[in-house]
Length: 289
Image: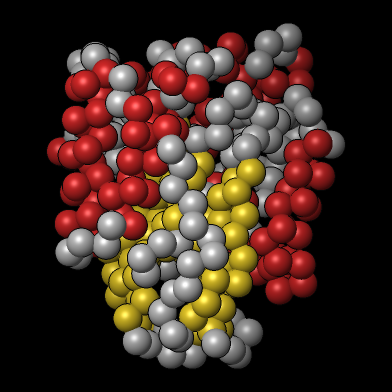
């Protein structure tokens, strides 16, 4: 077993680039037995990672949570801060592959691969370098009150959640029991239809990179999909404007509390279609000095 990946990378009190400081971090386990989100603000790198449970994992075993392993491996690879963000993504992906090999994961069963989404950035003067894959997002909030989402929202789960919206209220089982075939098909679409780091060479084709001028930016938000506001219609995009308003008023913790209240009111996950009552949450807010 690759034991190093069980140590969460979390250093929220580290200082960062003189232009920005860490205003707030939030990380909270959802309703699963393992928190598969992690984050790091160490060594001038800021990253959130959202691991995905392997379909073949034992859901009650921390040691076999491939999603947690992949997330922590990725955060650790980035926070060493060696080379370009592209180099770091490549190393993280290689280390996930190596860890799976040491653990005896069947690489031919793609639904068994350990995987993680991530969003990472490094501040350099009035610019940020960023990298992202999967369901994690980066949002820039400007001094004029506007905001910009610099990452894209993948839609791999829309069809599954739309189906659950229709049949969930009359179903006796959970979404994972009733729609297991559909969920498996989506998982096998990793790095074919959407990107995640999972040790496959194709994973790097789906990592997006960029450089942004942040000279007029007051806040930078990185967060996993656990901080997306619950949505009644799966096909609708994440309401980033509403999220930014909540952040301005109550911070990431206030956003988390509002999301948890909405999810708590929908224990069957039918009004707001999703895969479990509470998702794991990770978020970082950077603020200009």
